[in-house]
Length: 96
Image (cartoon, rainbow, N blue to C red; front, side, top):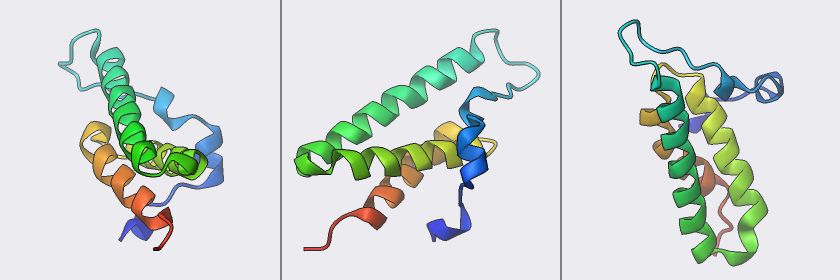
């Protein structure tokens, strides 16, 4: 399912998250609030998984970073990011 939303290495290097495209009628602080909200979501999701998998910090962080970059390539990053983050982490989760 997540293979349909992929992030190329070039997209990762260009910092897609820096390219916030606010709607025409958005308040001036729209991009700042959007980036801040996604950052808080990222932290909460990372901490949730690191509590369950204390030794998985690196693969968890990489999966969440990829999800963040993929979400920023959509028109609604705050909507897609949480689902993509959970999907990417679950794809990399060690099997029991």
